[in-house]
Image 1 (cartoon, rainbow, N blue to C red):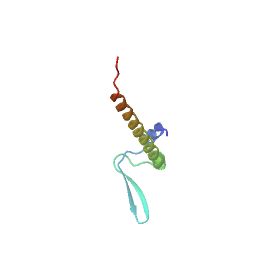
Image 2: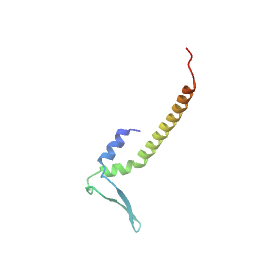
Image 3: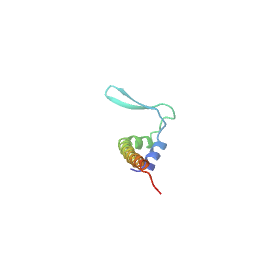
Image 4: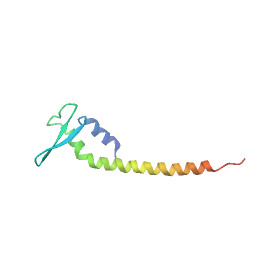
Length: 86
C-alpha cells in the first residue's frame, strides 16, 4: 500500500459528497459541491478506479495497527504488573 498515492488521488478528485443515481438500467455519479469535472479530467476516474483496492489496503492497514496496539497493550499491562526490587 502506498498511502501517498491514495492521498494524491483523494486530493485531485472532485470534492464530495458524491451520490450514485440510476435512470433505468444506467448508473451515473453526481457530484454535490465543487465544480463538475471536465471531460478530460481523469483524476475522478483514477480515484473511482482505485477506490476498491485503496479501501481494502487501508482496512488491512488499520487492522494491522489494531492488532499491534492490542499486543503493545498486553505487553504494557504485563510490564506494569512487574515490580523491580533494588
